[in-house]
Length: 217
Image (cartoon, rainbow, N blue to C red; front, side, top):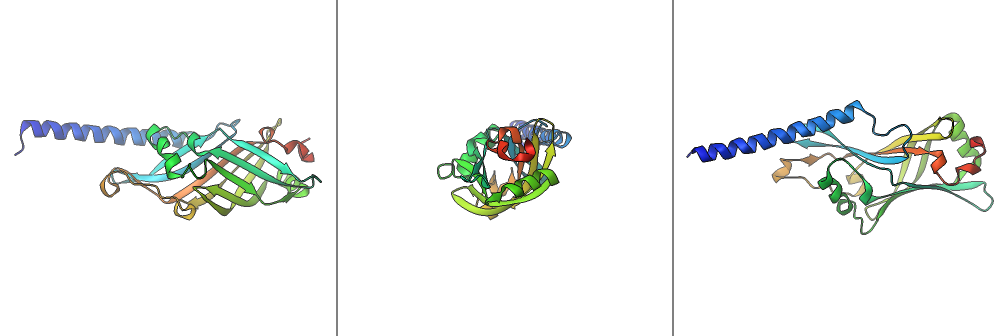
């Protein structure tokens, strides 16, 4: 029976759903209007999408500026590896519930830090990257208890006091053996996409070891 009490409950549920939808699309619009990073930030981020209440393509971005980056040189200082890491618990997507789940989703107990370690690069190789303004850098990515071979596409821009190193890796959650749970029965409330971008936005003056690359002197 459609009693006044039942109608009142349904009205409250509809109002809550409408508010969630408005907040969701308001957040998406904010991201569309501004870059993920401020120009002078030294940070990493992830970007993915989700479906919510049957609306697809809602963008989700999580960012962390708790980044450790270093160039490890051989004793001869003619070859080096670049290492960049970030704690899985440090990402901020603007949703505290989602951010609180990230360490569990990314198996933080096995891999507390997402870590990229490049292949060995010669001094000449690195000088060419900065001078040419772009490069593809291969290496191993440690995440969720596993290690994967990856290749980041990067650009290098001279900002005067430092070089800005920006770029991304296009991958997928399944490719990294990460399972992101749905929310609600059958993903009715939120269903994640498998698509994933890992975004890089690093400053050379905050990367230990870059002072040994002559092009930066």
